[in-house]
Image (cartoon, rainbow, N blue to C red; front, side, top):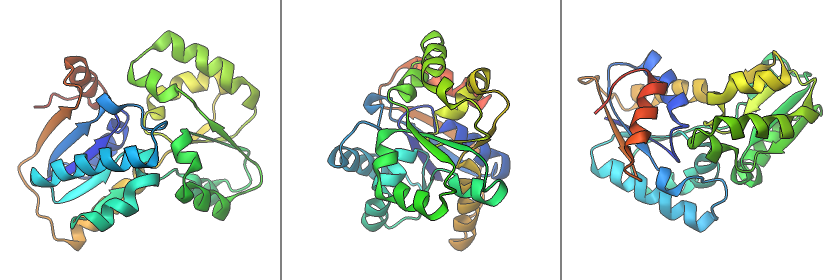
Length: 244
């Protein structure tokens, strides 16, 4: 069994890619909407939150944990890997992919405060900085997406992204952001998007091979910490399938 968690439904964008390549396993998706958003939490708060989630998923029988949240990954992955005796796959902003495919292109990185201020992100950014990149902290955007406030999202993007007209590449540094790609295009045009989901799939494939995790009867269990039925409905809508 493989456990996946995020601060809400954003991580479903990662889970969709996982299922395309690895459909023959059993999964638990843990949506921590009770504590959403993660981006404005302190280090201590995030450590406590994510440790409790991983402890729960491991006790449930998960053999691999996927952190499908950029903020939790950037801040907590090293601590969690030291704490738990299970492989932990963690997402990161796909800035390296820009370096690999369009290294000189005008680039915009969108992420939460927690991700941008993390040591891990700063290392990644300075390693691949093309000196033609802007970084923008999207305060409150993940929460608007989590709550599916479409009108407010449109207003937010128009207000905050219009100054970046002319960018070629956009790095989506939060797993909620791929859910509004079409809306971002309405403001910035036909830009190229990069997110970390494919990197997670590649990591997960390697870990499955390394620990010889055998395929199992396919099953998806959904858990939401706020226990709101609307969360399951959105999860199924985004994933395009029914779940337990």
